[in-house]
Length: 186
Image (cartoon, rainbow, N blue to C red):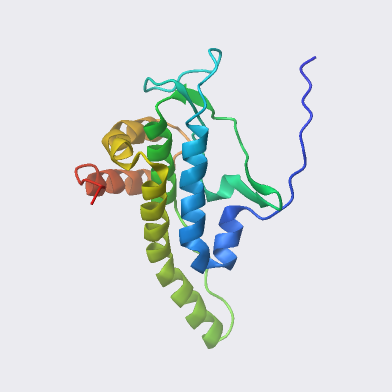
C-alpha cells in the first residue's frame, strides 16, 4: 500500500529542445497551449485540493517547457506535485508568469572573442524568443483573455510563495503591470 510504480520516459524536455533548436519556438508554444487545453477538459476529482481561485478542472500549476518531455510516443507532462482543482485560465496565467518572468542564469561568457560574441548574440535573442513563446502559447491555450483577467490574482498567489527570489518577484510585478489591462484578442 502507498507504493507507486513510475514509468521511465526518455527524451529531451521541451526546454532543452528549444535551447538546441530555437526556431521550433512556435511549434513548441502551440503544443504547450494544446496540452493545457487538453488537460483542462478533465474534470477535477472531488479529492483534489482546490487552488486559491474557484474552478472545477484539473490544474497542473507548473506546466512549462521544462516539465514536458518530448518522448518518441508523444509529449509527456511531468512534475504533478502542484496539481489542484480550479479554473483553467489560472493554470494558463501561471504558466504565462513562469515563462515570462523566470530569471536567466547569467554565467560569465568564456572562450575566445568569437565564442563570447556568439554568446552575447544568443543572450540578445532570448527576450524575442520568450515573447514569441508566450504570445503563441496564449493564443493556442484558448483562454488567453480569461488568463489575462486572472493575471493579477494568480501573480499574488505566486508572490506569496517563499521560494520566489527577489528578481523573479520584480519581474512578475512588471509583467502584470505591462499586461493586465491590455486585451489579448485581435
